Image (cartoon, rainbow, N blue to C red; front, side, top):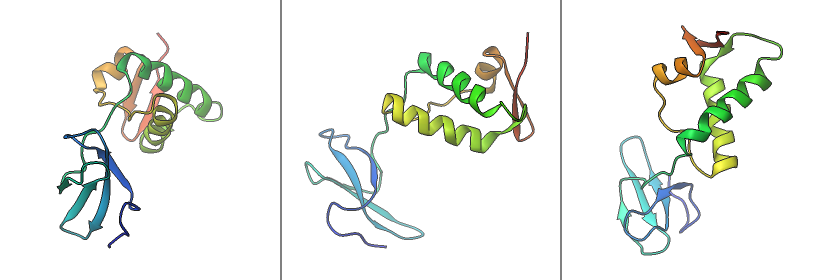
Length: 120
């Protein structure tokens, strides 16, 4: 699929100048991004900023508290999708990579495809 100049979806941040990398062309095999500021053409979507790791625990707790009002066990993938959206809106950054050990130290346990909060 091809988009008009500078109107495709955002890919990330340009590694050269810090401008926005915009998707210009995409098919099953190849993607082409261009920088809106310096014109760099790349197959890489650029850099992504992530939310501060120290604040992510607050976001996870807040989202779990909201979603667990009705159900104690929450599906993991939709939960992580909501956490990602909250991180983007609150901190203008993506949800960083979190290991299971980190989640368990925060009091969460992943069982199959569900996440639950373990009371200590």
